[in-house]
Image (cartoon, rainbow, N blue to C red; front, top):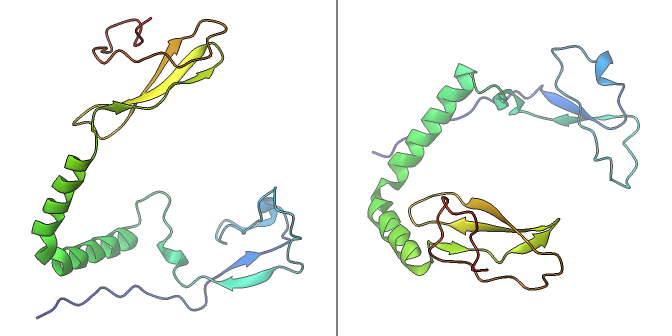
Length: 160
């Protein structure tokens, strides 16, 4: 039998206020944070403010400690795992195909800024870039070639 997806609680009475609001100091601690526009927005604020429905607002948990939210997310993850387990072989095959098609050890083109060359290196097996900088001589207008044999123990990653 197919698993049943978890159904989140909908609080039909929950809302947030959007528009021209009093300062946050006037808000009580139990009320949701007001929605404000970006300071760069050229649109006028809604006046008077409007109530926007927020039936799933209870799921917001910036501290990541609300057990109700965490349990619901675990149930959703388990449901997703069960529904997609027949794709496990395909997932692995696509991942291997993806890795074969990309250059895992690579670097970005260096960019000059404030007396340094800035660039990122990508090393095979690492899931994150290494951010680098190297001194730049005043007046250098080209991007020097990167020394492929460089490692973090050297002072300069460029063939100068």
